[in-house]
Image 1 (cartoon, rainbow, N blue to C red):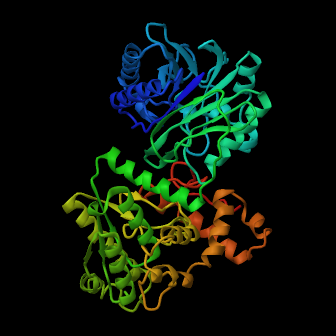
Image 2: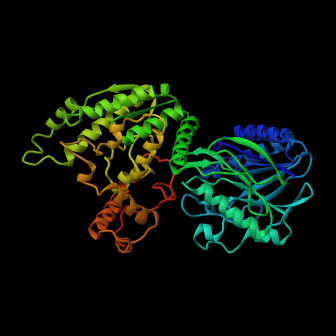
Length: 542
């Protein structure tokens, strides 16, 4: 059998646009010789549709589109992911479904069994799980149809979540092949993890697996594609494109192919670029504006934006104050020249002095502190938002995950914006990204990379006046935020107790800031935002 995999970039809610995309991919796969064509999970609605499913016409319109696809395809079976009504009177109103479509034959439906409710997932809010699993006879072969989470094992989930094992059940009932319709969000290292898991399953059950994943950005989530085929010996026989829409076919008798894993920096960079591009295209934005401080964070953000949108659609703005160094201004100018983008220089010294003078009497007798520092940041936010409003630019924020974690950012200042491009990228990875960007030639000025990072809000300021060294900070954050270890457990790993206590306190006390941050692109296993739900008002210190 020749299996076609349509690795599609669906837009959530664009049911008829997704319909045309599915039909076009089907025709291409059939022309390539496919005997069976797979699409990703919920390819017809986009993933995740969230509360759109409750709209009165959403699921009926989805079913109308499914019928249209059914009428237009031929005798090569097509597997389409969609949302259906729950056929039972008890339970959640909908099911996460896969339709097997063959021209002029009745539609056969399979429902998802394992519904994730951790991290960014909340499927049990909407869907009722399948109770049983049965293989389908397709092209003379018993095919076990699974949907995304249905193939994830306890070892790779690192927790025992489910009482059923759909793959084991399907194989026990005679499945000779397993296919998986997936919308698995990206995290660095996850594509390789998926293939390792499926390879183990193939060897355990002695059946081939064909895994069709979505690509594209939908709000914070980025889907990386990386669809693949694994033979019954656990060998990769097909590996599809990373971060690109693609249709390919693979013969079930194909030989193993060589593959190599990309560097984490390359994965993250491509994920961010795709996330920015799709956020703009799917939301209807055309151009971006961002602050160019001459530092490494704004430089990396600018490079990603230009790659995603084109230089003509990106505007940089330098907003020097009395504390800005000439070196930083020169670095910002050089970056803009290297990228070919327009750069405006709008000084904030005069408005800052005017603003500060308004508080001369009220603040009399008090020393200058972070209040005056934040005035500068908020004036920059005001400047950038003014340009955003006047020219219909979307403002990109340039704060990294390390800063966001401990609140080293100014609400209504540098946090202003519509998309937080690098908010899930730790500072140490920002440096690695900059090195990867400059791997062939200097794009980001070397001085932006090697100089001590600084907000330049007071004389001779550096980040490390306030923060621990970034290597230490990121290591502690990985344990406290990523692995959710207690401060005591982190200290037991060899970190200084006072440093751990400082990080823990600031992560906890700045939850209110992160609640008001722009949506950020998820590239790690646990990002701030929809995947991490912490109370703002709480006193737990463990």
